[in-house]
Structure formats: C-alpha cells, structure tokens
Length: 438
Image 1 (tube, rainbow, N blue to C red):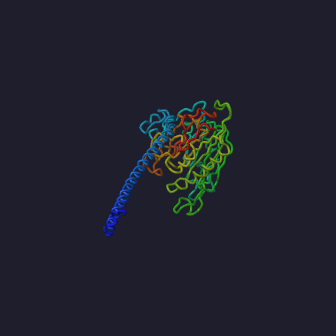
Image 2 (cartoon, one colour):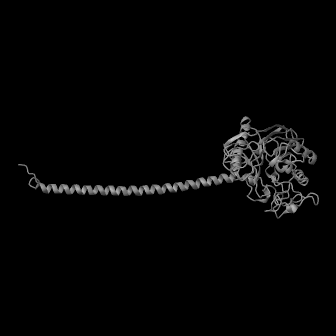
C-alpha cells in the first residue's frame, strides 16, 4: 500500500499554508512593482538631466558657431578700415577740410572725416542728402503745407553743398532731396561746372512735397527708372503719418534706378564696366518704421528681379535709409544678400556718423557680384559743419560752411570684373555666398 505523507494532515492546515504563500507572493510582486517604479522614476530623472545637459551643449555649440560666423563676416571691417588720418574725432578738427579762410567753421565739424584722394584707377561713388535743394522759382503744383517757396535753400548752404561735393570728388554722385531735374541741372551748371559731370538726371519720386533722388555722373547713364506709387504689402495702421488708416501701403518715394557705363579705358579698364545704382530715400518719421520695412521689402524685390534677369549684374544701393543698422528695414537689405560696406561701424562713432542727430542713417551696400571690385580702404564719411548738440535747428543759426544735416558717404572701386576676391564670405545677412561668383 502506497504511503502519502500529506494525506493525514488536516485540510485547513494545508489551506492556511497555501494562503500564506499567496500573500507572500503578492507582497513580493508589490515590492517588485514599487522597486521597478522607483527605478523607472530614477531612470526618467536621469534621462531628463541628460537631455538638459545635451540641450545646453547644443545651445553653447550654436552660440559658438554664430559668434564664429559673425567674426568671419566682420573681417570686411578689418580689411576696410579707413586710413587713420582720415578719421578725425570731435577733438581732432585739425584734419577737417581747410578751404579759404573764413569760408567754413572747422570747429563746427562734429562728425565725419576729411576726404581722401581717389586712386587713379578707381571709380568713386557717393551718396549725399543735400536737404531741400529747392530753387527760388515757384512751383505751382506745390502749395499749402508743401509750398516750395518756404523751403528755398539759402545761397550759403548751396555753397556749402558745392564745397563738400568738390572735396569728395565722386565720379557718380547720388543726391537726395532735390526739387527737380531742372534744379539739379541748374545747380550743376552754377556751382559744379568744373567737376566734369556730363550727366545730370532726376525723376519724380512721387513725394507729395516734390523731393526726389538724382544722379550726377562723369560716365554715361542709361535706363533711369522709378516705380511711382508701387503697391507694397500691408495697409496703414491707426495713427500713421501721412496716410489714412487702412489704406494700402505704397512707396512714399520710389527708389530711383540707373545703369552706369564706365567706358573702356576711362580708369585703365580694358573693357566697359557696367553697374546698376539703386538710389533710395526711405520714408522718415518715428511712427513710420512699418512703412520703411514695406519699402525695403519692395526695393529688395526690385533688386532681385534685376539680378535674376542678369545674374552677373553689379549692383550698388545707396542713399538715405532713415534707419540705423539694427533697424528691421535696413536689416531687410542685408538679409537679402547685400553687403554693408560700413558693417563694422560702431554706434555713435563720430567718424562714421552720417546725420547731425548723431545717427548713421545713410548707407552704401553692394551685391556679391560687385564686392570684389570694392577698394577696401577707400570708404569714409565726409565731415561738414554741424550745429551744436541739443539745439533747435529751426531757430539756431547754421555755422559757416553748413551744407546739410546729412554728410556724404563715399567708397571707391576698380572697374574691372572680378577684382581680387575676398578670402572669406562678406555677406552680412547670414547667407554663405561666394563674393567672386559672377
């Protein structure tokens, strides 16, 4: 007979042990779950910490790369520093231009530098807002708040403008705030007859008070073009200057485009050298930043249309942008690929200040195709007498030799395609381009 050792044990005893075993098993399972949860929590915390570290490392790497690109792009500044003697400070007025005794108040030259001589093989371009160059003839189309007879430029200031233009000796000069083609021609023939400007051209820009941009040139100029009242993106907000709320935004003053031909041999160049000028005069006013941004976007579009049709086209954009370098409207030009030739100017540096207010709002930019031809050490802002800081220009008399509340901005280039390509990309807009690409 088989022997079963557990047969004689009471059923309750066996059930009790089984129950205890189940309890132990449940406890162990619970402990395992708790332990697993704790491990998962610690693991998740560790992963989160690792993610934070990785994010910080990525941010630091991105910042380092951005800083490196910024340093690389600003090598243009290092290569394009004007000669030390051409950048006087407000305490160094002995280096200001010295015309005939008594003709100019050199002590009143607060900004800019003296002019440097143009190289014999160089072409000099410049921009100069000449501040209301109206003549003494009444324009019947201008009346009321835009009456031109209220803005006639005094003879002393006309002479100041002429003196500055003689000093900078630009081959191609863009002027802002002209009354008309007729006034530009009269001014050239009266005050600049010895300058060799065979071309004087200006077109209506659509400004309600009649001011426009014009070009004086020693070389042939073709295809003068404006885009009067060209529609831009957006509508005017409430409280806009010079526009009703909700009305479509258009160019307040159209940009002015001309094509310049430097004939073969004019500066030792073996063949014709062509370049396109876009002369700009952006909307002024503290409340018009949005308008300037729309104008900038529209002008960039026009420039891109020109270069798309002709990828090798040389382009220089210059004028009164009514914006400093950090303003969104100016950054739109730079971000499009244009190169700011004063990219390294320091805020409030008197040597590169372009306006009597102490701001730098007049600029010269070129595209990548033209950059190799730029003579790096040629740029400067030319200093003319200014009123003292803080005075009211409407009541404080202008100093002797006063020309304008703006100062000429100047740069030279060699009219030979390709030039000497820069060793690093000079595009200040962040797009990596080859400036030598044509």
